[in-house]
Length: 137
Image 1: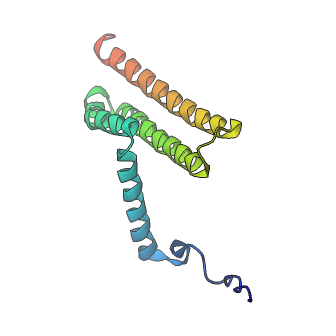
Image 2 (image 1 turned 60 degrees about the vertical axis):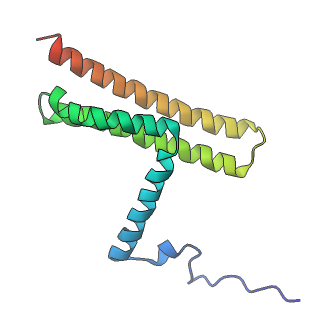
C-alpha cells in the first residue's frame, strides 16, 4: 500500500483562503452571522444582547453629545465582543477534551476575567454618565 501524496501547496485546506473580493466578504459575513447565532445559544451572550437592545438606544438619550453616546454604546458592544471571544476560548478548550488540565482552566479563567473587566468598564462608564447627566446638573 502506498501512502497518499501530501496536499499540494497551491490548494488551501480552507476554501475561504482561496476566495477574494466580494466573494470572500460575502462568505465572511455568513460565518459572522453563524457566530452570532452560536453566541445566541449561550445564556450570558443572550442576556447581554437583550441588555444591548435597551442600552444602545438609551446611550443616545443619556449621552449629551456624540462622544458620550459613542462611549456608552461602545462599552456595551465591547462586553458583547469579549463574551463572544470568551465563548470561543471555552469552546476550543472543550473540543480538546473534558478532562481537567491546569492550562485549560487557566485559559478559561482568563477569558472569564476579560468578561468581568469589560462588564466593570461598561458599568463604570454608564454609572459616571448617568450621574453626570441626572445628578450633577
